[in-house]
Picture: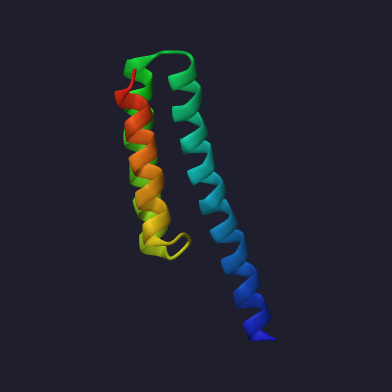
Length: 79
C-alpha cells in the first residue's frame, strides 16, 4: 500500500519536471525560429539549468541532457 502511494507521488512530481523541461526547450525553439537572439539566449540559459536539474533528480539521463544542451546552444549560436 505504501509503495503504491509513494510511486504515485513520485510519478506526478517527475511528470511535472519533465513537462517543465520540455516547455523550456520549446521556448528556446520559438525564440530561435522568430530570430530573437536576446530572448533565445535567456531561454537557453534557463533550459540548460532545467536540464541539469533533471539529471540531478534522475528524471533524464546525463547523456540525453548533454545532447539537448549542445543542440540548443548550437541553434542559438547560429543566429
